[in-house]
Image 1 (cartoon, one colour):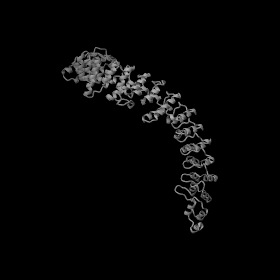
Image 2 (spheres, rainbow, N blue to C red):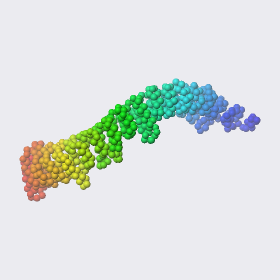
Image 3 (cartoon, one colour):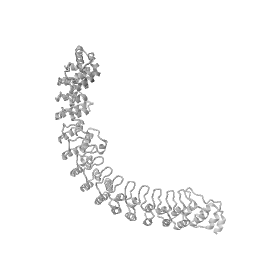
Image 4 (cartoon, rainbow, N blue to C red):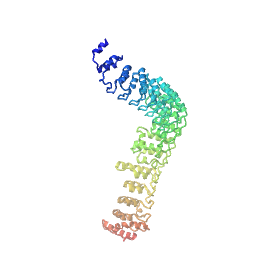
Length: 638
């Protein structure tokens, strides 16, 4: 009947393909439909030939027939896969055995640089054993750098894993492109039996990944539940004090995992806390420093986790005053959280934390607290790093008061700008803070390195650009004087506050200082009085004011023997000269004039010769002519 059916049809390519891809091979039907004009090498879009398709479907007889017709055993698809790879997909032992016996290249790699053996292993294909026996390139790595051990573990079959492990030619310590070994795979970390099996068969737990982490750093990720493999990792060579490329030990990482679990309200936190205690029992170095030169205690303090902090502090092995790379201590880190963190701060103080330690910017925590108070209460601009560590809702004032009351704060030391701690407090008019510091012992007459006290500092730096600020400034200045700040103090140049005020501030400041009855006759290091400074300022109004308090200093010469009126005349300050003459300034200079000054003033002789030209009336003209003639003789003016 079949013969009649075949004879009734004409040979065709379609019928041939149908015959070849029929699960039941019919030689007569194939022979009938095959003609020499049929191209058996035609391929589909994936460049699969009939040979590939026959191999995938395990049509062994069709495969044999196609080979006899000259189709290539190493013919490749778009993915560079030969029929051998398709035989793997068939999962047919007989098919695979035939290809190997026919000489199929078992070491050929597809587009992913994988061998047929690797594909068989990862798919759990029963042909893997046959390929394992007949493949030479057992340590081939695919494009991701994974070899057979990665494929076996990815498949998950204990039988396959054990078969691979028994073959000692296969590198169990292969490092892939991500710099990971098989021990770094998540599937290994979650399977204790597999992890132990790998370790016992030579997997090296000390090999590190791209971050410098060995197997121990991976084993801790599941908390105390991985205690067994953690112990084994240590037994097989992992050092508990080993550091990754961030200079962190496993303890650092477990602490971070514990704190994250706490933040996330995860029930894993207790597991990680138990692991922290377990690691401590291994005599791990809790004082190990990371790249920031910090111990694990720094992270614990920042977290405000009392359970963790108590655990570490009760070990009594930490240097409580250790400074990190920025010079910060754990106390300073705790203080950034304000008075709300007082319970932890008290603990640190009880363990000997020192409030007077200076960071790399030469700043103490006391200075930082003052800076933060002035920033949030008085809008002082502060260092951006300090600002990032703080928050407006934190109570820094009460914390500062607590530290002043309960610790030995050295208020005599300068701040990081070489100024007394209270100078900026005054400058920003924070009177409450000033009273607090005064109560705990600041010396209100303390000077900076330039020998300036707080009055100098306020005069030089206060903002008085509007009436409100001007009034606040003058009130503060008066209060400082009332408190007993020395108005006769002199700076490194010998100048008094009044000297400075004449040059830097207006007449209101000068009048306030004059009313405080300072030493009107005070001179600087060059013997110059406040009237000399009036000349530099060129202000007749200020001169009259000062002269009304003491009319003798106008006739006091400096160290060089020069009177204020002489300077005014040489400098061409004619209105001031006339005002001085009106106030009975001496025309004659009876002092010995320094020769260097005689030489210096030569370039200003013309100002003396033209003095009378600036007279406003006959009296002025008479006085200016007299001054001119006198100075010509005294200063040898021709």
